[in-house]
Image (cartoon, rainbow, N blue to C red; front, side, top):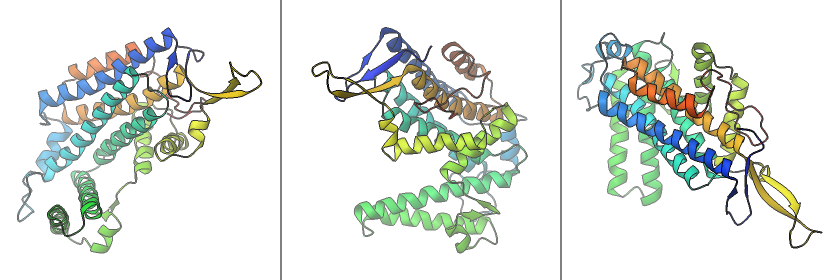
Length: 339
């Protein structure tokens, strides 16, 4: 696919893409759809159960569920709490990729895809952050799992209070869940302080911010998978996608190309212009982040790779060379490196 094939969109939002560009969008849509399908096939077959001899089995032995160190454990504690966080983030990433597939089939390539790509990368990064490096001990994973749970509980309570008020039954229920979780954490990890939790610190670890988790993910990929994405480049990835999601003016203005008006040759009109190569590289940024997260989880649980191999084959077919060249996937219209 050459950078010369493009999609041009007038300010009215209609898409005017050449035949080759349309065909390539459908191929990228197919790849994103396969990502989603592979996740659900994996979950349906293995049900998040660790296999004999896997890292997940070691985790389950060290962190039984229900957790015997808790007086009144909830349904998901111990290794099930860790698996629940990982499963939820992968499920969300797979859903985002399904949405990206739908956008491409509809020819929507200008504004929304970058927001979805950011969501995929963020969720994939959380998977890496929770599981960490293989040298991390079971308690390290449990701490990170609890920090994710605590953040979720606090955000749910906060949103309910602002939307409906603190007198509503929903807010009271979520506030109770939040308080019980904090009490559970304090009981499970002696020495825990409210001040530490207020700063998202637990067991010597601090909850990673979204951008920090993304940088950490690419660091692990550089260490273990030969990725050539540096820390600075990973920050650039996140900077650009953040400016698409929480908008500044430049990402959209970078898409503008000023051309003479067909009706008034002495005037210029703005045409929104994106090269198919950019769409492809942006897609690759999302697909490869998700692929590596799913690869890590498959290996961690010791599952057979036959389902995951279907995704490997699809990437090799639809993004030739991407898995052999980890620096593929810049995601800025100017072509600067971003993944």
